[in-house]
Structure formats: structure tokens, C-alpha cells
Length: 134
Length: 134
DNA sequence: TGGCTAGTTGACGTTTACGTCAACGTAATA
DNA sequence: TATTACGTTGACGTAAACGTCAACTAGCCA
View 1 (cartoon, rainbow over the protein chains, first blue to last red):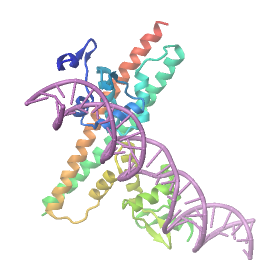
View 2: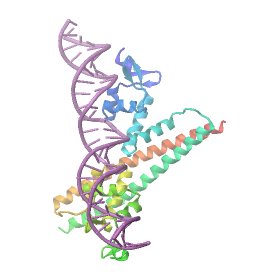
View 3: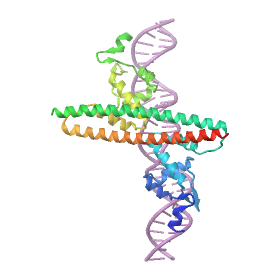
């Protein structure tokens, strides 16, 4: 198989583990770890892992979660939430609850960021004032 | 000393470790740990710790940092940044740099939150559509 | 065919941020 | 004065999220 053929398929681009590693600046060890934690499920070509566009998006979500301080367990819930399993009424309701919980988390973080930003602004002003007096 | 006298001083209200523990819903163990990490420095009355308004604010900052996924090391930097040490020109410049770095971190987080919020909105819409069709 | 490159699977190590005792001190209270 | 509540200092334990080997495999290229 050539690189070109390996690089694309019906569903879109596919990636090797080092592709993802470089694109997202994360180690291959971490990527395999996420798989072992049930967050990624790449196909195999022999024993080698091949990541689909879906895996790519999932990884992006994991890393975004990390930047926000979410645990892998929380990100995994989010991922499972996005992956439609059984689509009965009860399941839908449950997902809507989780959506709401995620929103509340994000809202709290948003509020914390605003507070921090304000404090940074104040502190910078104080420092600039102090610098003028030198 | 009565509770009343213990509860206030020239600088404002003072707190015992369990006061803080209850107000912020954090264990006393954690509070002592933050001190051992050089983030809090309460006064002592005998061997007992007494926390000032400044300590209160610092603890609030630590916990806000935690909600945003900041490491204690990062929050400690922020705390030290707010505590004016030597106030020479070079020091001021350095603090301004740190302020800027903190802002950039927060900006990234803000952007991540927006993305997540959008995705949640989309997903909720999809689910509500699917529910209508049942 | 030998070596290079990329990938794989264990297995153990490490850092962060506390939790969880145990053993003790001290002060108010019954 | 004995108990209860609150606090203290070690010391060891633990969960999460990987890092770091070591030993192996499989494809490609001179």
C-alpha cells in the first residue's frame, strides 16, 4: 500500500499513530493510553493502528478537555454521549441531562475565567502605576 | 479568648482551619497541604493555625485555579505574582510577562469553552429532533 | 541480507494532590 | 477530673495520567 492509498479511504483521511502524535503534539504513549481507557478504537492493519476521522475528532475532544482540566473519565462520558448507542426515549433523556451538566460545568469555568481576567487587569494597572513612580 | 475576639482583628475577620474547610468545602488536610506547598502562611496561636483575610483570598484563588484545571504550581506562581516582593523595574517587567501568560492561558480556555458549548448546542438539537420522530 | 524506521506489547516507575491512619496536645465542659 | 471537640505532626497509601524502558515485529532500501 502506498502512502496515498493509506492516507485516504471512503470515510476521509486516515492517520497513523505518529501522524496524530505530531499533529496534536501528544506522545504515542498517551494515545495508546486513551485507547486502553476506552476512549479511542482505531482499526488495525495487521497489528498497526489506523485512526479514522472520527478518532481524530475524539482525540481533539480529549485534548480540549485536558486544557480545561477535565479528567479522562469526564471526557469519556462526553465522548460516549456523542456516540449514539441505544436510541430509546430514556436514553435520550439521560443524554440531555448530561448535556445540561456539562453546560453547568462550563458556565462555572466561564465565570472563574472572568474573575481571573478582572483580577489580572487590576493587577496590571497597579503595576503600571507603580512603574510610573520610578 | 472568646469566639468574638478570636473572630476579628485589625485586618478583618480571621478563621480557624475548620472555618475555611466548611466555607470552601475542602478538607483540612488539603489546606495544610497547600501550606506545605508554600501557598498559605497562616499565623500561629500556640500550635494552632489562624488564617487571615489574605489567606482566605489566597485559598479562594487556589480553588478557582483548581476548577480551571490549573496545577498547584501554576496557582502558586499566580499567588506569588500578586504578592509584591522586591519592587524594582526588572521585577515589574517579569510580573507583567506572567500576567500576559496567564491571560493567554485563560484565552485558550475561553475559546475551548466556546467550542464545547457550540458542540453541546448542536448535539442537543440533534437529540430533540430525534425525539420528535418517536 | 543486513540495517534502518516505525510500530507493538508488557511491565515497572513517576509526579501530583491529596486521603487515611496513628499518636499526641489543649481547651472547654459536664 | 474525665470526656469531648478540635487541632497538630509524621508517615504511609492511593488514584490519575502518563513516562520510560526492554524486547519484539514488520516493511523498506541499499
